[in-house]
Length: 141
Image (cartoon, rainbow, N blue to C red; front, side, top):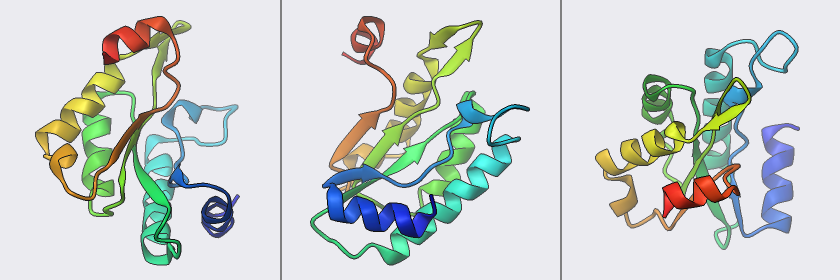
């Protein structure tokens, strides 16, 4: 998918959707992306495209946070936060030896809170990718 195809399809078929991000869990020799920087750069390009080309004001678009470490998530935020959308989606659950680690979600929330993102008038939604387990629900509650 391209940013153009994804945005046009989303605006026709959805009411709330994230930008087209490149998840950091998809990095590796047998995966589509080779480095964190590649994921970040492609996601920045998408954020810019969505910001400049959104045409349906009834739709809500979510910016995205990704990363495997607090440092990566903070860097991702620094580069994506200039693109103001209608909320945030937090992804990138770190998988260590097959176990999902919820720390990334907590780090993402912390970064958003520290930077006042959740107090901004334009921020209406926060979404968490891949957190349907009981453990994740308890943490988020």
